Length: 129
Image (cartoon, rainbow, N blue to C red; front, side):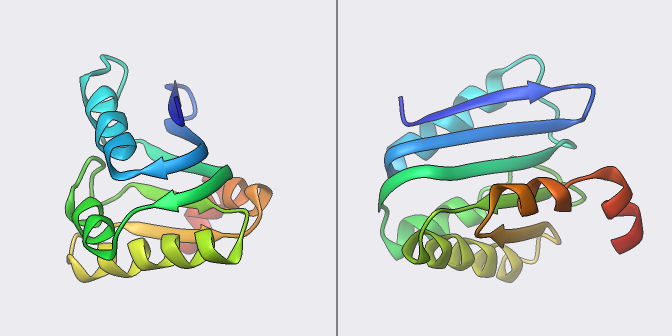
């Protein structure tokens, strides 16, 4: 399975990990499983670790569709870590579409997993709030 998640209730974070070829159907299944998980809280933040992705098989329209779906609340932060210029660009497209949806969500894309993790730290959040 190219997309899995771990819910850390204590840290109030969902860590989603992608690997291999990432498709729209993978993301849709992931979102459905997440919504149905009894430990999921839409107020949690999300770390999306895409450093294991080898290819992204999504169209621009599919990225726009995913960006318009609101799994997390407006106050949640979503940090995306990527491993290539192509993946970074695709994640930035998601970020731009998310912002354009007017949902007020905080989405950032990073080219290093450590930077994404740092951005989600509670002390960092209080400084940027």
